[in-house]
Image (cartoon, rainbow, N blue to C red; front, side, top):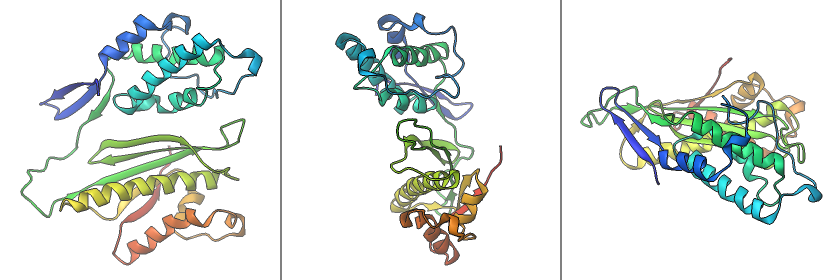
Amino acid sequence: MGCKLNFDKEENSLTFTQPVMIQSFSDEYGTKECSNDPVTPMEPGRILVSGNECDLVSKVCQTYYRSGVGKLLHMMRWPRPEIQNSVRELARHFQGAVDGHVKAMHRVMQYVIRTPNRGLTLKPNRVWDGNDRNFELIIEERSDSNYATCPDTRRSISGWSVRFESCPIINKSVMQKVVALSVTEAELYASVQCAQDMLFVWKIIKSIGLKVKLPMILELDNKKAVDIANNWSVAGRTMHIDTKQYFIRLLEDFNRKDNILLNCDKIFR
């Protein structure tokens, strides 16, 4: 994977970094063109929009852009999940980049260069000796969405994280495949995607003979989405939501029957 693994015995943690690729950002790409020492991968609130055909960069620069974004895609996959949303925005313009997209790519690279020692850290909050077969492992999830973000399609963005014993094992930032008609609907779509990843992890753990503490907790920050997930609301305003999104209600029904596993909760930041 091209990653450097740093194991801290005292902290019982494992950190992924990619110093060689970070160095390549300085050596091969014009990172000096971006703003000095950015503290975020992309400007807060900025959305990259498609450029006019007359404003597209040259074929050589387009190849340069694809190469840089390709490296960032690899970096977000392993040591730097916090740049996922920014890199997703960059990757949407593989076929038609403009100068603004190239500068945005430089900013992400500069952010990574500014924080070379930051990486994905796996640090479980508990230790299991492997002997107690009744030991219950903990899986936690959080999901969120950004409503109607894309100015071209008005699709929302789903973001979620699945944690196994407090270690982030699945981190996603993806554009939703349908146009949500409300914030609640967008939040519900994100929670369903998160719940599906949660089930995937749960089935893997179960297949190797280990136990998971039930119910698992899925945290949302939208009260209406929480009510719908728990089947507390059937108002007419939500009847337009696609039937498959009520998959999350089925999990709640299973939980009541002690078969599976989901408890939706809300958090307020």
